[in-house]
Image (cartoon, rainbow, N blue to C red; front, side, top):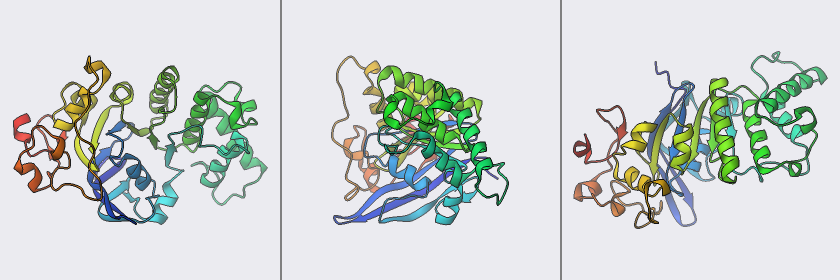
Length: 330
């Protein structure tokens, strides 16, 4: 039996809209192990946020699962009833924007306690009525995690409104909310994008420490390899809805083998003395190219690249790679 806490296998998803059928995810394949921080990397428009929503059991309106599985400890997350039982309890979520995540007319304490009210804690008495005793228990747990994420005076902070906190403090409170139910997996959708560089560094360090202290696995969505280097154990690279390469962080950063991964790495400011980019743009999911979706932008592309979608192969160094030229990089 697999020891993966999260397993996404051969996932293909399309969304029907006014313009036609958009093929958003095309056989996405990766897994996250207990206690591991897995980075999910790719350009904007590659399907990362759609993938996160699908894992949470909240796919976009009009979405259709064409093939594949999404499993949490063997339980089917594509089943809405199963996902509802797991989401918010065993799987926590840290959204991207700390400024839009809270309702401005309620205190942060009231909003996060609502999460605990409906999700509960693993050791809550089963069938217990939500009374003052249970609410006090949940409040004590919330104060505990607020202290863990370094919110000053957490007891007093519960009675404050979102606008009374800085962006970095709001993000810490969102992290506390994700940890409050004692999940074993957290999905973090670019949680540092809206923050300044100094605050971003603090949040990344905090997330890494909390993942280790609480033994929580994390799927960390980002487009920044600098962030990947600081927090991730392994990395899965996506392009236009396809998984193109998966490996350890040192493998991906120090020796990328898929052409897209290499060109993406070359765009990082620390890797180049000039402003650089990848020619062309991500293909439209309404009219994706045949075969490898990166082929129209790839300098190594041949006729074989467009004849069929390359499968994700296990490489000799332990990584997975989707490229018809795999033998050239072995």
